[in-house]
Length: 268
Image (cartoon, rainbow, N blue to C red; front, side, top):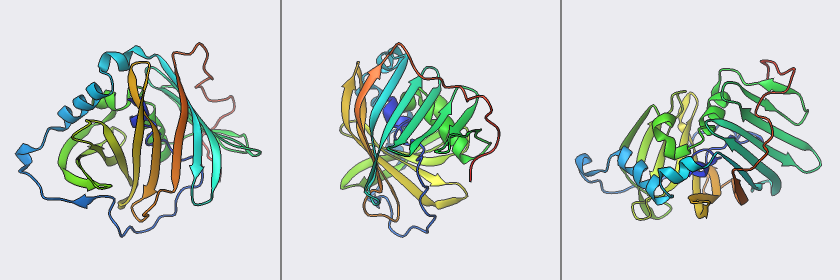
């Protein structure tokens, strides 16, 4: 989730650990078109990322963090269900996200820098295969998030100005090294990243949009404490993640390594 400060990048696209949304053909668009300047007058994608880094505290502040722990609530709005979410990050690129359903158990997705793995409510661990979910977990694991855009993205291009939730923003298309395609959106006034969207695998018309807000300074780095996720077909968000607190450079973290016995097989 995922940010993305790292929270914008990694946490804003945190892999949903609950049921995946049904695949539908979108009708409404996530953004509205507006009158466009000449393409030469659009800021470069690199300059937008650099402005975001400066607005969130600067690269030195981002690099000063060695690990981060996020604690919050994960709300499935349509089902009116609330779960507990915890995310653990460690430099350079280690990631562990846990969603706890009270009375049922905990679902985990993690990456130790080499191996991505998961564990569902049954408690049986498994290694993530070479598929989209593994790519998303690895994408989330980039510790610097959008501050590490040179590592996180294989390509970035400023495409246009669009209207997102009533305000004009810059749209920057991207593709990750693992083939995930989408776009990030920057507010020209605050310089902050305000949303990230991702195309569904094998269906570019199916788009998931995550908006982020409520930036708060955490040990020198501004991070968004609230994110909302929806499909392009939806007028209202279906998932909301609100972080209650963030700790930086804690003494002990849970393991990022897969449990013994994890095999290349996911649960049905």
